[in-house]
Length: 193
Image (tube, rainbow, N blue to C red; front, side, top):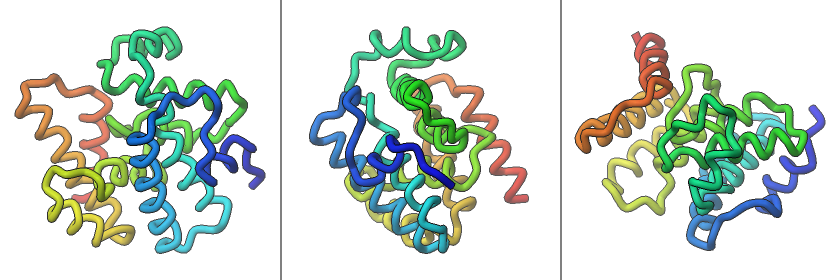
């Protein structure tokens, strides 16, 4: 598989010039990339697949520090009503696509790493999990460490636990659930049955 230069550079930690991510955000992306690299190795993925996993980790929050009002106009019309906190994923995926990256699995993973997506394969599920479990997160550190310790062999089970926690926190705050997240949950539950 020939990788797009943007993907190869991202896997080395070099973000596109359009990225808007401060030092704390870049540190988060580096920690996610470390998890993704370790998990790709643990699964025995080939070099190209490993590069894609690490690149997705470095790209997932490339626009996280951008003003959501500016991002809203850059995403497809169907995504313009998304909450501010999740716009950065679809906006980054769209920028990456415009740059010529046609890797649908990588674009899907970057675009929906915060909400999940029922179409996720291993790359999307791993990024969804790594973003939530990276060791810089301070909420329930022991539980997160236990889940990280089960990776990558229990990816689907861990993804189900992470989805439960993410949706549960939203429900506790009284936030509406996104249909994409519910659909992802339903896929994970059906697969676990």
